[in-house]
Image (tube, rainbow, N blue to C red; front, side, top):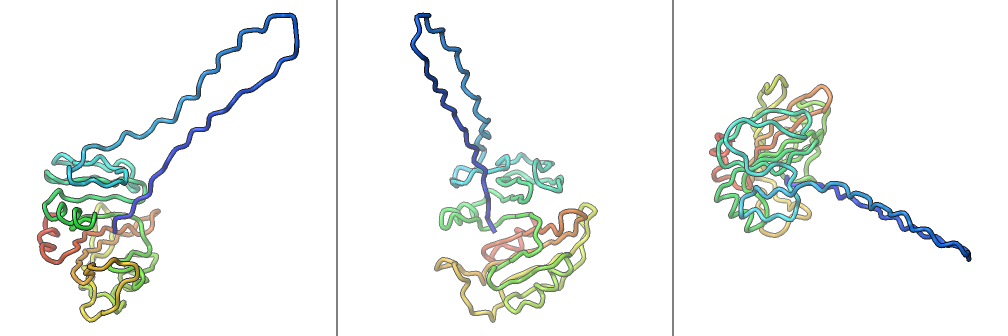
Length: 231
């Protein structure tokens, strides 16, 4: 669930050339040509945990002070509150990400460059929670997507419940890999235990952005309930 894209700006420089015929008159002084001003480069985010040495450029402000904050680019925008020690690395029109600066996340990042616990938000009409190849959770509404999740033999799900957040209604459901599912997810590196992962999905219907999905996920079941309480 950690996927980002980045924009790179390019600058084009023109070359002026000319020629002159023979003449007894002195050549005029050339008119100075002012170089084009480069497009401004976004200021790199340096306010990050020392262990978070990713090569990807964060689009969020980094470490957040405790208190209330408002998204800068995500659509639809929202206001949220965090305690001390939370980090916002992704704030784009279609993706928002938060994670706590904890020993568990530091250890997992050192092992796999992933996060043990994180919150991701984005508009998705086809979210997947364990392995994309096994899931086809498509739908135009939160209810349709959740119904597909419940029917999927690869997933073990809780009973969906109705939720309302910020005036938006939808569904909440807890998801894990079904203990009886024995296939390997294509493309996953050796040592990945998808059966140990846990995710709470909150799916909200919006009038103009489709279904907004909030993923509250843990790579390991140990500590997931405590993370849900904090998140």
